Length: 64
Image (cartoon, rainbow, N blue to C red; front, side, top):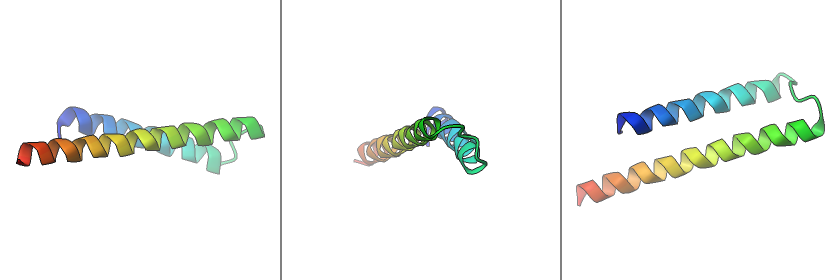
């Protein structure tokens, strides 16, 4: 994987883990805060999926 993309993937993963820890430790003070944290996690996961898809497409393109 491209070092830049790998670095981005690791940053996204670290951020997701931090937010999951906040949620699992009861860090959400209100229901709205909980929903915001969950939405942020979902958004970061979507970014990871898109990044993985980009890497796959780039690899497929380079293999052709």
